[in-house]
Length: 174
Image (tube, rainbow, N blue to C red; front, side, top):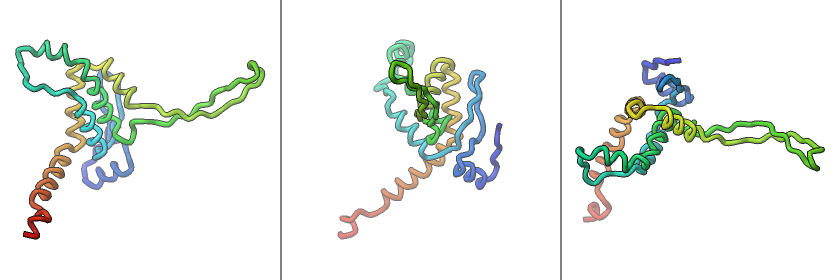
């Protein structure tokens, strides 16, 4: 179900109507991908901020670095899951009917239960368990491009420039 949105109007309509904008195949499994949104980029940025950073990176010791820090990179699955599902689709409410028994199992009663399913955690775990590192890297990079990260960056840098150029209250008084 690959949609080709060619006009800006169709892209905006897809985002507003929360239409899936296509699909992505990762290691033989096809996932519907969500339209780009600022909320998705913000959540990805928030998750990226939890990743460890390196003060100095010695490329000759890359194997030691990978072995030492690999445990701290579980959020990579979350990042990929957020980029695939989108900010609005990270959880899902599902209803199911369960049977409750009382009085030593003699009385039965059916009850509707609403469960919140963490789709992000499910997808993140599936990606970490089943996807090669190179494929996960390519998926994250491609989804960032499709989420219009460059436009987001242009917006925040232009707003930062406006904020820098705007005179402060003390400058206006003097």
